[in-house]
Image (cartoon, rainbow, N blue to C red):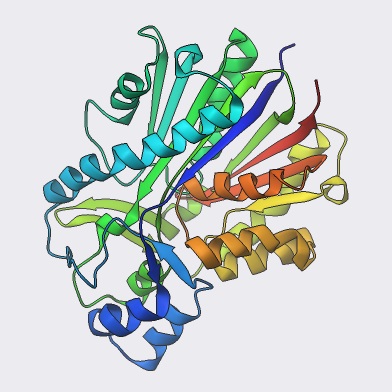
Length: 344
């Protein structure tokens, strides 16, 4: 059977935003501005992040959703193109060789979309298949990776996955309540891409597992409003994840005669500092296993679906024998992927 191998990675980010400067220059006056709000904002585990919108120079909190989607169309294409071109170059694959392009975003929509526009700009074949994954949230990269891997496994042709998330376009009107302050302290903009090929050297996508707890579907939401998309984020989320994460991961590993102790690299989606703390606790991981996840959160913030690919990009440089990627989002949903080092 053909092995789907991640052979190339690419990333692109817009301008850097300093967390303390954002608080002092904008969010102190956009939230309650009290000590509790400041503590939430400055203790989110984020030092810097990225935005196509810098609220210090451009306040879009009163923009309509139509205005935000128009800006998404303008900003998403060059960012996505940079990430995808880099991933193709890294994999030594020409765009014309791709049999499938899957694009992921929960932060903007337009048709013709990224899939069509980038196919034309990169010179993809007219018969290349396209899949668009929308509004799944932070975990979307993993089910999308499953789709791409299945295609490579069955067709024997290269395929690409691109995640583009521009959360800064959804700055909400003041005053932000506690839940909104948490969301606005974490989220960031980025594009990340991977190219998968049939066989060769790299990380093989071995298997995917998922778990959805619909009893807690209200704990995390992402609703379209007349003024952008609004995040709902309950403080219960880490507790729900703690309940399901160990069984989801161990069930996945058991299918391949592996245990948590066998895994030498972990890409845990940094939904926030507390999420990473809970994951480390319930999976019994020492802090070194979360180094890359915490570092991506610190330097780049939570870039929604792009984040787990950014962490994997850093982990692959350590050449792990086996790795697990985990991400979480609305549903309440968990996804996990088992990846294994493959050699020609």
